[in-house]
Length: 64
Image (cartoon, rainbow, N blue to C red; front, side):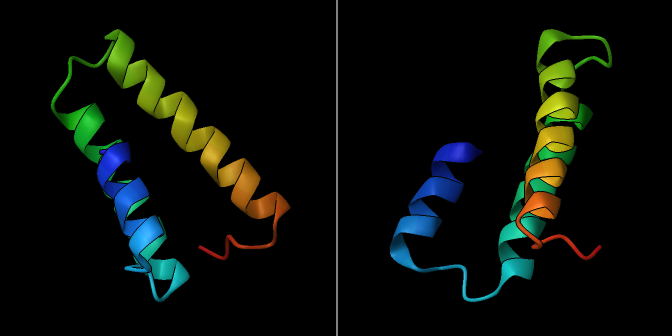
């Protein structure tokens, strides 16, 4: 979840961008997997994932 990712960011856990992106993608995937497809939370995950990718691309940090 975002609190775990935030703690990991603060502690320097992410030594590579790939580790950070992998955790973010796992969070989005889990949210979509464990909530009904048309639920508020699944829809939030879809939108947040879209915005995450856009912002990462804008910063030149998305090469997947």
